[in-house]
Image (cartoon, rainbow, N blue to C red; front, side, top):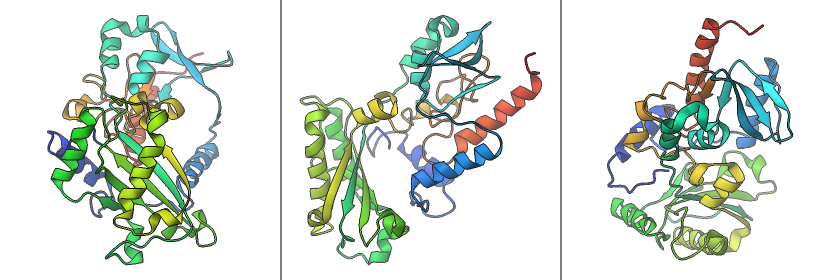
Length: 324
């Protein structure tokens, strides 16, 4: 999910971070949650409710409320407010600091720095519903349970990235696909399958077109590219969903459509994530914390940013007695 090319400085650090975050297997390996990502989210929600948490959905937060230069809760779009000893955001830090926090409270310098957090979305996703399991040349069906990477060479990756620098999508895109129904047949009943394909590099800002007009072309390109390695794939496709970087911003609130909440370059990694001086999960003013992919160690479904943030929050709350 890196916005730079394979030969760019800093990409090795991303590989090392990915390797450190897995369970000891090969770097980049896929882990499929039984029941899909929704089942994982529901399991986490159920655990939280078991400890007394109340979860509200369809409740848009429009502002972090502040008293005496301290975050004290959130204001919702319906006009109601929720008070809290700690406000913890899993939104990307750029969006949090530039849209939810009063600029007077954080000051012009921090707001300027937040505005310049690099979020160059370059990833799209194509979900395919298939009537059967595709056959890949030279691969036994059981080998398809992992991650399927279409990247013939490092130079191929660099050339795909090069096109994105000029606002174009390469005709030879870098693709990563998974077929989760192999590991969990319940996701595709009656012998059907689902294929999820991540396409990189697909720039957020196209130079000569809009994503609304290019969406179908990207879907066609992904299927055509995959079909070189899985002959007959297009005949198996019964439905298709194409999610572009613009969709990731408008539908999921990711600034610039960046799935990692910020580019994992060397200047936005480790103690520089999201910003130098704000890398310990405290974001801008007392009582406001960051727990999502925009915090160290970055993106991916690891739970690490949240676990790290929780330790810091609990430590701070022990030092500060509840308000009376």
